[in-house]
Amino acid sequence: MERGLSACSSQEAEREESLSVAGRRIESLVRQLTATSMEGHSNRDGDLSFQPTAGSAVSAFQHLEQAPEDPILGVTVAYNKDPSPVKLNLGVGAYRTEEGKPLVLNVVRQAEELLIQDRSRYKEYLPITGLAEFNKLSAKLILGDGSPAIAEKRVATAQCLSGTGSLRVGAEFLAKHYSQPIIYIPVPTWGNHPKIFTLGGLSVKTYRYYDPRTRGLDYQGMLEDLQAAPPGAIVLLHACAHNPTGVDPTQDQWEGIRQLIRSKGLLPFFDSAYQGFASGSLDADAYSVRLFVGDGGECFIAQSYAKNMGLYGERVGALSIVCRSATVATRVESQLKLVIRPMYSSPPIHGALIVATILSDRNLYYNWTVELKNMADRIISMRHQLYDALKARGTPGDWSHIIKQIGMFTFTGLNKDQVAFMTAEYHIYLTSDGRISMAGLSSRTVPHLADAIHAAVLRLR
Image (cartoon, rainbow, N blue to C red; front, side):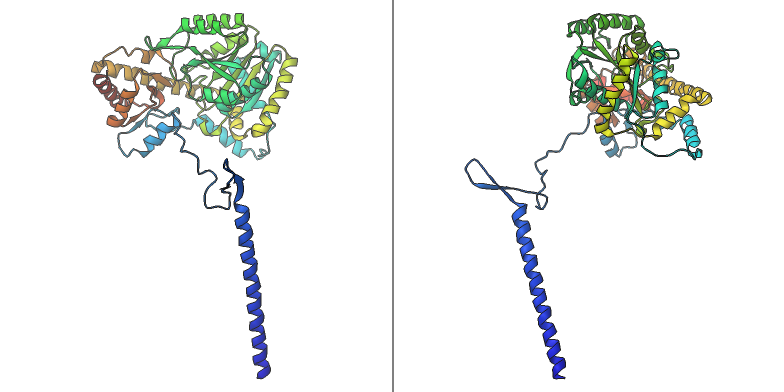
């Protein structure tokens, strides 16, 4: 019995000693962590100050201020918070059906079904410049059948992350390899353009484009500003359906712009986000690009399939660079890879496969053109309905610009106070510059918008 008690006492003593050692180790570890989590730095007075690290209760990013919402995407954020049953979102740049719902094209669903059924498909990485078939078909779509530039292999095309990614890749390429890294952009333009080109390494300047008095093109001002640009400067041009104004040059004006740009040795950079979506014709909406490519000169073209195929979330687009020779085009493509590789390595595969499937199949391509024209025609119809509704109400002012402008957006001419009034009193959400997305309207909501505009104009002239 005594031996048993003695053994128990010995075990208890060993356990206490073990716990004591463990406790000392924990205390030592705590002291070490405390010492290393506060690094000493001398301030101007020679006193030590301490910076918090990951081990501290204070975040290393505590100093950050809340960033403002994106001017365009923030409209949707505000809309989503509004509980009103009559609220209307006309800020988003995405097509909506007559019922106000997002649309997945039937031809897109058909293409996806074909891809699902093809068991030979895989999900391996694409090459740096993307899906070769997609690139070939994208260049053909924008430049046209029988394009000499394609036949002569003078076009370098890379699949990019929609139009935004195409613009950014082009900007970084130009900042690295072009002798005059200055780009002139129109006033106004898509809100993301200045950020893309600035962060891409280019110096951003502007040229006159929109005339608020006529709510049309300031053609003379545009020519004067481009004439004053330094030789070799880059010029951003909206291929069609100018965002945000919906104001495009006429064919004669495009020719005048082309002559000036070529005579000055300027480099055109087209942003083509709405091919086929503006007029309903793929060829008509590519007129400006093909005019410039047809003279044999060089140009950049950023394409997006967000609008015309409804592939907003797939982020599929292309950057095509038309060069003077096939040799130069080959070198350009090799350098594009060096821009893309550290940026996002290679583009996603699914959206590119959808586009390539549609563009390569005669029946799917035809069905796509039909659906595309239906979307464009509905937007055109919304323009006429809104114009007629304002005219019927006797709304002060000339509203004919609504039916003269083209594409997804209308630059209404409403000022910030009028926009704020419409949001507060009618729960209608649009950007503060008065731009509305015609694709977000329907026959049911046109009267509500017309009432809001009418009241805003009468109340806040």
